[in-house]
Each structure stands twice: as structure tokens, then as C-alpha cells.
Length: 483
Ligand code: GLN
Image (tube, rainbow, N blue to C red):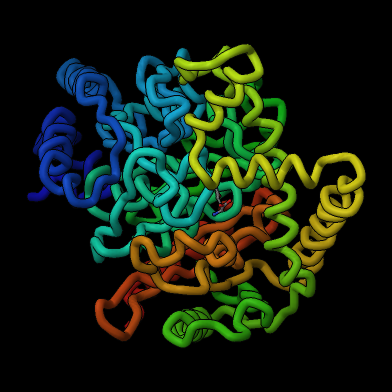
């Protein structure tokens, strides 16, 4: 049995039936990483001692006849923007190259308390800014389905690790699509909960009003199990919501007959034919499952990209002011005075995209431009959120493509930031509205080399259970393998 091609329930069953030990599961992953990750390059750093120590703890529990925690022995990869005590947390940035986190993010704390084994930290776009993982300050990650292509981003390392069986599940972060888009590109499931559903404590801030931590997995059930563990109020994050966490797993098998599935016309116009084809088949499958398909409109969709790139850069310019060579990470060796030290440190420490965003963000917040850009964008954000709230009066979930294009070639969009920003056209809307979204595999492109296509599902605020139920019904009906 291949111990790396397993789901969470399979690991649990293997442990309970004493067919495998947690240590064997972790070792199988470390062995696979040692070979396969040389070409995929999903990980920035590994933490074998930490994972093995945790695995042995689980095995001792088993031997002592104690109950196993819900994620016992589950190998997890953690995006390198999420703090892990005692391990490097670089945000894939030179400026934090040697930064060791002094504490765990709440999501990591909860995963480890539930028995999960942290294998290492995954590559991403620097400070989670990008859609291809090519903005990493260290090296790009490759799509396991075609090594000449990008895995998506910014959580490309997490998506690729799960797709290549280099971890069972992973944590990523999503500000404007960074979990859902790489999940689509890598052919796995990735989910962003409602804003505030998962604590952001220990997530390095990019755009605080949009940042989320969320799971990747190879099945909807695995994603539900991880979300269940990390969701819920955390006193360390004042924006985490005091809303009870539903039993996501218990609801998975509920019948979807009669549910109203909305299809927004703005997301289908001018769509890449290969992707459109698969989405249409997915919609037909929902109809076959007894769902009611409703054509809807989200009229402010076209403004979302502009709105997102004003708000996220504004927040980034403020959040990244802390990397000044004094308090965190890298400091330039050569400088003439304090101002020059700041300048040299930031110039050498940050990559081109991060600098671009700091400049854009500073501009849209500057006196005289604030009203025209930042304030206007905040108003547009409200209109976008209202579109969704109104739509959910008539439908239970909304189905769209996750990405307008299949995984592109490494290097293809690096010279054109605007093209890269447009890769987020279907994901930033939900981020601005704060509603939950999931991307599930929805077959492959017809033409060679048959690349993964992702379908996105949205639900209303805090209706994660519904989202997972619908995604699971689609998976069970064979939707992941749409031909
Ligand atoms: N690709 C988007 C961006 O570059 C989203 C990033 C993210 O969600 N972290 O901002």
C-alpha cells in the first residue's frame, strides 16, 4: 500500500487496525519528498524531527490504548507565511530568510493538538503576492501535472505538495484567491472559509481585511476535517468570529436535491472554451443530482479586480512597513545613516512585486488620491458584497470557474503584472465580500497535456457546511473526473 496516496480516514483506519504506525506514514512522506520534491520544489524547508516526534507520540498513545485525536498521524504541509514555533517562517522573502517564528499560528497549534504532523513549510509568492509562485524570493514551484507549468499561487507549494502526495493536507492562505486558484491548477480541493471563520493569529499580514488561512486536500472530506479543526473563535484574533462551528463532516452526505444553484452570467462571458466546457458539464451534473439551476447576475463583478488591487496594496503598504531592518529579519550591511539603512534593507530584501505593491498602496492612500482611489474602492467593495447578499436570497450556492485559464507556462506572465492580476478575476470577488469559497477539481482540459480545471462554489457568510455538502455531492457523483 502506498502510504502517501491516502486520505485522512484511511490513515485513521490504518492506525486503528494496527496495519501502520504514524511513524511509518510520516517516513513514507519524507522518503517521497526526498525524490519527487527535487522536481516539484513544493517545500522551502522540512521539519522531519518535529513530524517524527509527533508521530511517535501518536504511536505511544495507540500502544497505551488511549483514544486517538481526530487528525492523528496526518502529514500536513504549512505555507511559509504561517508561523511555526522554532521553524523558519520566511514568507518566501529574502527579508525574512533567517527568521525563526517565536510562536505557532493558532491554526498550526490546533492541527498539532489534533495529532497532525507538520512535515515542513511550503513555497509561495513572496508575502503571498502573486498567482504563480514565481514571485518566491527563492525558486519557483512546478505544477506536478506538467513540470513546465506553474502550480498557481500564491499558495502554489501547498497545492503542489498535496497534488504530488508530498503531504496529505496542507494549510494555505487566501487573500484574493491564493488557495482556490492553486487548488484548481493542481487538481486538488482548496477552501477559504468566511472572513473570521479561521483565526489569522500567526498569519503574516498581507492585506488584513482580506487575509484567511484555509485547507488543501485531495478530497472534500479531508478539507472538511481540517477546517473543522482550525475554525472557531480565537481570543488572539479579534476579527475571528464568535459563531459556532457546525459539524461539517456530519453534513457531507445530506441530499442536495432541490438546492438552488446559481450560475452568474458575468463569469461565463468570454470564457476559455476548454474551461467553459467543463463548467457546463458540471452544471449539467448538478441538474442531474436534482438541483435547480438558476441564471443569476452579480452586476458589479467587472469592478472587482480594480477594487481588490487598490485595497490589498493599500493594506500591504501599511503592513509591510514593519520590515525596516530593525525589528525583523534582514538588515543591509552597508549604509550611511538610519534612513539609508531602511532604504538599502528594503531595496535588497524585497522582490519586484512586493515593491510594486508597496508603491501602489502608498499612492492610493496618499493625500489627494485617497478619496479617488482608496475610499472609492471601499464603496465598490460594499456594492460587490451586496451583489452576493442579494443573490443568496434566491439561491443556496453559486457555481463559477475558479480560474479563467488553465495552468500557464513558467515565465509566461512574469513580464506583465496586469496579465497576472487578471488571473484572479473569478476569485477576488468572494474575498472582497467575505463569503466562503471552495475550489474542487472538475475534470481536465481536452487538449494535450490535459491540465486540471477547477470549479468554484460560493455560499453565504458562515454557510461552510452547505458549501462542503455541495462539493462533496459533486465529488461523489464523479464530478472530479468530468471528461
Ligand atoms: N493573486 C492574488 C494577489 O496577487 C491573490 C493573492 C492571495 O490571495 N494571497 O494578490
